[in-house]
Length: 185
View 1 (cartoon, rainbow, N blue to C red):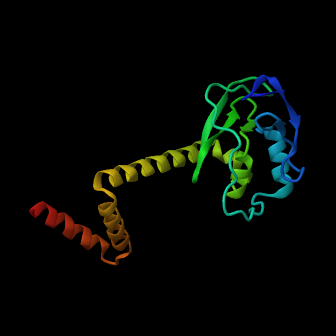
View 2 (tube, rainbow, N blue to C red):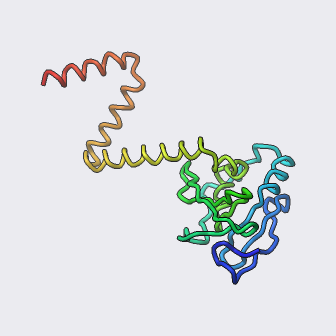
């Protein structure tokens, strides 16, 4: 098996994760990990769904930049698909659409573990998760557009007003009043 990032020149070596309980293969050059789908599910069956969170305040730094270009599955040589993780994590995870194995660049397993997402790895690849990530990105983009258009001070005041309105018991009446007042002006 060869590294999908470093290509043909670098072989993957056995390097179990999770205190030796999760079989994985590691590239000694880029520090990435290949996790076979069956090995992941075998590990999950042993440890259950919610493994204990790692008490770390800052996620570890990734050791490799996000590489461009196609990556091939180390096992079956099909093209790996890229999936955004979301939930405050800015990188993608690669998955073989043929054998369902997953490639994580150096430091990504640890970053997932810090946020207790490592035991949900297959969920990252499903349509529901990816739709939620897309919505998250769209909301962030929209907020940044408003911040840019309004300026920091007005954006902050609008945020305070939104927070106040959202918690107010007469929220609907206040919105109606603002709309009515806006139409008259």
